[in-house]
Length: 127
Image 1: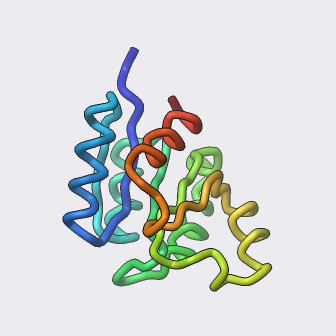
Image 2: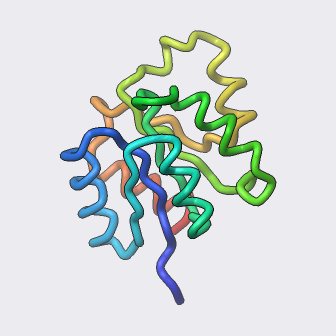
Image 3: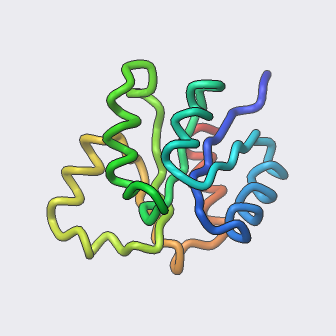
């Protein structure tokens, strides 16, 4: 069985390497990019089984990226985990509908999410 591929969109190099290391140790293939434009290129090169996305990106907001990502028919069914420094409460009630429409299966707040929980969530979604 081939390894499941995760597209990790994370602008923080240290966090990205930490996430990549732990996920690869658990048997996943991780492709890391820093921003939205690179994520589209990476997904086009190799369709991921899961996307993990920070909402605070440099050139786009993560929400803009999610809308763009979902506009491609081949990517509409790919599950997305948001792993962000932006607390869900900042989006008020609109966030619940937004993440549902955009296929976000989990919303994890970085300061409250440890590596064990991240791996558990990834395993649950695509493991």
